[in-house]
Each structure stands twice: as C-alpha cells, then as structure tokens.
Image 1: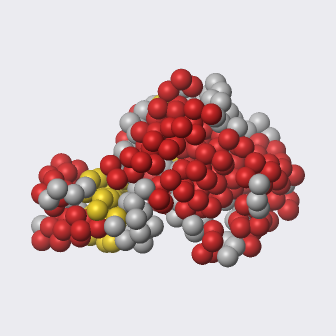
Image 2 (image 1 turned 120 degrees about the vertical axis):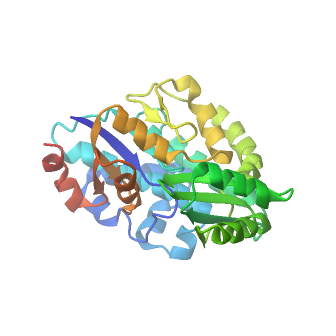
Length: 311
C-alpha cells in the first residue's frame, strides 16, 4: 500500500485547534511549546483560545496552522505503532511548509518563523481593498485563461488555485477580478467572490516573494525523508537544493493541486491522511481521484482510526 500525507492551508483554522490533543499527547504539547519559544509569543494561546479575529490575521494563521499540523504528525508518530512513512507528502499553499517539516527538510522553529514573515509579506504586498479572489466553476482552464486576459485591461487577473476539476480560483486587482466574474456569468459559468485579505498566488505577490527569498536564505534546509510534491509544478521533489526556489515560486504562482493529486494517483497512492484542522482537502481529493481514499486526521479520535484505515 502506498500512502500520502496531505496538509491543509489557510482557511482551515478554528479556535480550539490542537487543545485536546496537546493535553493528551506529550509529543504534540512539545511542538506547541517549541513554536512559542521560536516566535517569542504564544501561538498556543491563539490556537487554543483565540480570539478568532486575531487567529485569522494572516501573520498568525500561517504559523498557527503549521504548528497544529506538526503537532498532529508528532502525535501520530507517538500513538500509531509501526506508522509507515508516506511515499509522498503535499500541502495546499501554506500546507507545503507543514509537509516540509514532516519530511525533515525544515525545522519546526524555522518553519513557523518563515510563515510569520510569509503571512505578513503576503498581507502587505497589496493595500487593503485593492486585490480580490473569486472561485470559478464551469469553465475549462483554457477558457478561463483567455477570459482573464480579456478582463485584465492592463491590470492583473489570473488563475491562482487549481483546486478540483471545474473549480479554479482567480486572483488579481479587484476591478479586474470583478470584470472576470461578470464575463464568467455571461458565458454560463458561476463565480463566487471569496472573503480573503489579499490576492494570493498571483503576480501581485511578487514583493512578498522577494521578502521571503531573503528570509529563506537564512533558514537551513535539510535532506528530505520522503518527496514533497511542490505546489508550483505538481511534481515530487526530494532535492533539498530546490526547496527554497519552489517555496519562492509558489507565492506568486498558482497552486497546482489537481496536478499534485493526479501525480500521486499515477504513482500508485491509494490511501492518504489529511493532517491538520478541517476536512477541505479530503473533499477536493474525492473530486480529483476516485482511486485515493482519504482520512482526515484532526483530533485524538481520528488518530485512533489510522491503524485500521491503513490496515
């Protein structure tokens, strides 16, 4: 049996995440303590107690989700006898950092510090209200790219997340995204504006990519225990020399989630664990590949089901 570990991104956060787990698992509790020490403040308190409006700030959400996912990995390794290492790991956007921590490429301390900078840089790259994102249903990638070119009118609007067949998220200048939404509706598709704080994964994020590049130079990258499928190209990477480049490219490039899951299926993956808060990725995988079963692992009860799921 070939398995994969999947890690969620921003949007899956919830107040209380990891609290019961840390109380029950010394390994998970240690992860939260290490994250607090690295950041110099209590990400643990934010995860466990909120408030939600503070947890949802991008510079907090990103290290909080990586910490919670890493605590779940630590608890899995502590609790599940003979837990097999995955054939692959992958994370959706921010989740790529959680995947790299699980694979040993990034130390937890470096990952949470990088994600704090990444979150702040992405938030600050575009002034509030000037960017937007929208989910588009019912158009092919080719048709949507052409439509974005038509809507741009000198501004930026482009595919940002290839989440599932027939569901692509676009990002860019607010006006251009609005024009694209109108064109989508006129051509029989469906467009839903997303409540986001910035237009992630498009060319407007270039200043954030440059800021992260400086920070990544300071962070040691270690050998990977298993390949991590990169968001940027949807291909497995086990070369620590490419990790920095792929993390920089994913900030202002689209998330190739469909391609990532299809690649796992081609490589013979049949079972995947979604490790982190929420169940978003399980739903997306179901729409991309019928051959991969997913168990969402987000608390003690789901950890207890892992052995049976992988039997």
